[in-house]
Length: 196
Image (cartoon, rainbow, N blue to C red):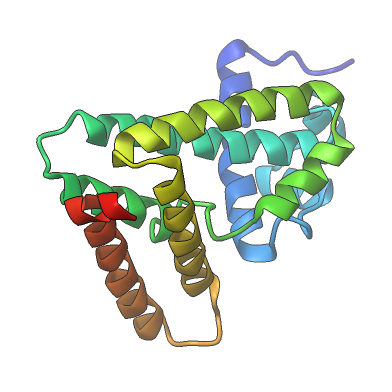
């Protein structure tokens, strides 16, 4: 007879799946994480895992989307804070690319595409809708045009590369990230960029 799990226990297990999966993605890379890795890390059986998620891909996608929601919630908090525009941008970029809980450097758009191909079509539809909404929120937060956002996207790709590059010392990576974040924040908050 299956064990009855209370709503509180269910929430604790979901939270454990979320946190352990983040760690696994950061340690192994999103493509290498298995259901076995997740259930071992959380301390549950495979059958229990499948009461929470239909597949490994659904779990990974959910974790990515939760991290994304957390980032956009933080962006909204910063947007309404008393910080200067440069401080807001700098803080957000540091949280995205340096924070130990961030997944920004642990997967890329191709990884998301691969997950979406393995998930039911409703996931792609929701992702397309959410992507447009997030894009508009980012434009508002940064006070930029779509053309300027393309430049920012390319610059943040550089950040992602630097943050995920294991060929250099931690000190070298941290210093390069600090320089890049400040340069990007300067570009975003420089009113002269409107001529670009």
